[in-house]
Image 1 (spheres, rainbow, N blue to C red):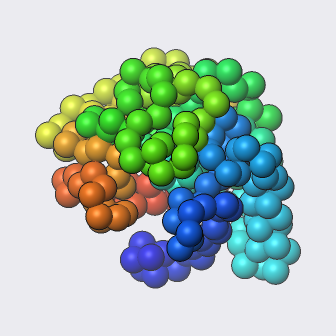
Image 2 (cartoon, rainbow, N blue to C red):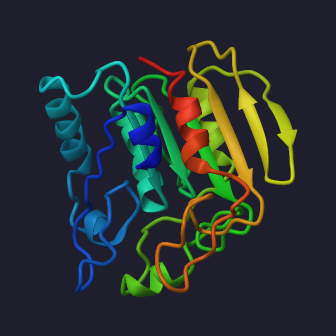
Length: 232
């Protein structure tokens, strides 16, 4: 909200489906995850594509500068929209999300800014099943396929975008690898945030008992700095 207000952006917050009593744990159908939306084959690609179309048709959004970000299952959904709606989305920024390793190539290249937490135990760096309280709260495994390792997200988009070697910078806050000069013209950035679990870096815990986010890296600011350089 603070970035959108300062920069004159339109920030749109669509909601998922299903959930527990009290509206908790709404989910997106990101393919192999998660929970209600996945099990009921909810057409979230169609829904979010329609949201984009309505904003563009109403002159509320520049069709060349539509960006998608999300956390956890929302990060997975960001990947899916990048794959399937590359004609509408200029860039994605999955935060503590994941891929599953069997995704088809995207319809077209999309710039990607990928953030993972070095201490994330819900979406583990090595891949495998989802962990944490979210899985238990879903009444069983919220996914139907093991996760790919976290770094597979960068591998997927660098391959799709025709990128060469990346450049890595290490600081106390994060380890960042940047791929520029890709054949598609679409950059990829992969950031591993130190001292950050399953949380939005620079933000606040989403609920009581949630992982504390790192205060040393502001994901919202970093994502916007990347997004504003990208267009279709």
